[in-house]
Amino acid sequence: MHLLLRPAVTLMVILAGAFVVAEPAAAALPATVRTMTWNICGASAGACADTGSASAKINSIVQQVRSDPGISVIMIQEVCAHLHSNPLASALSNATGATWHVSHRTGRSITNGQAIECTFDGAGQRDAGVAVLMRGRSDEQIETFTQTFSSSPNPSASQGWACIKDRGNKIVACSVHLLRPEDDSDSAIKRASLRDMLTELRQWQDFYGYRTIVGGDFNIDDSGSALDPLQAFAHEVDEDDNCNTTGLTCDYLGNKYDHIFYGRRAWLQSTGDVGSDGGGLSDHLRLIGQAAPRNQNEVNTAVAGTPPGGLPCVSNTYVTVCWENSGDRIWVRDDEADGKRAVAEWFAGANRTDYWRNGICNNSLGSGVWGQCNKDMVEGSEIGLRGTRLDGGVFADSTSVLYTVV
Image 1: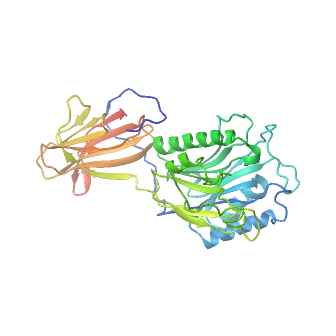
Image 2: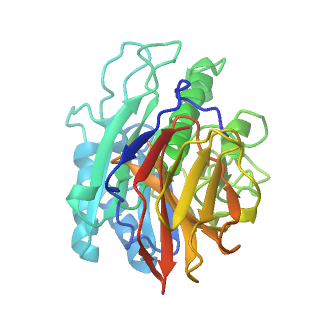
């Protein structure tokens, strides 16, 4: 049982006459999700002089996606909304025939709190920041949002991220650009940003069940311990390479400042490597990686045992199921010698309309024998549990539903 971000909740049991669960469809979830992050050096006329035009940078990304059509998440930094983020979404949609959604966050100056000006084209627009783009299935399933990290010691600090949620496939992806060392000499703002970032990622993953991806220019290499908590939470793309997304070579002024992280609970081990700079279009190299989503439909075989007394249970003529909060155990008993298997069917999530994790506890031990499946549920999540019979591969004769808060 995990003690996470939600306060302790008193056990609540409700018997319902019908089991109504709005499970998000995930039919479009691919076998792997490929992600690219790239600091395109496109916001500052001075720092990014002679790195090519905005259209050249956009065309380079479009060509990357054409050659690598598995890429479905793109994170870009040092971008302007009017020059890069919004035009890139349109260009990708036109080039691929798919809908690409974009979330752009304009940064703010740590000295005066003003939105950061895009000086790349001299137009005077204050829309320089970061963006994330996602190949989407439908507008109804996509949510774009931005966030400022609230615990920063400097309220005007430019730290935050741009994010997109795919609610159908339970994926949230965010693009971030943390401060340069010369702008955050004691790293206090950066440390606060990393803490806030990890808090949000844990909330999305462990309570709401989202498959989390975060990437961008962290301005942190792997030589110290600053990224240790994030690396413990998530798989890091190209984690065995410490120096090759900025600078010249690994031996000369090279640093791996760009990172992509896939949350460990919902993704299998990630792989990836650096790409090009687009032919001199940036002082950063692209980082591209992928990870395979874990299956959220959990099937367990019950182990024989005896449940303690006083548990909340539901039953009918054919099956009894109970929930043991201590140890997160599901108990199921076959109450009818009819050759059909007794099964406990369960769903877990934030509430009764946002279930993200589900499975069955399958009792094949015979009539009258208790079996239990030991699960690891998130503290504060709500469990919906019912008993049913497995009859020729079809669930039949279900009990009413027992709802409890872990």
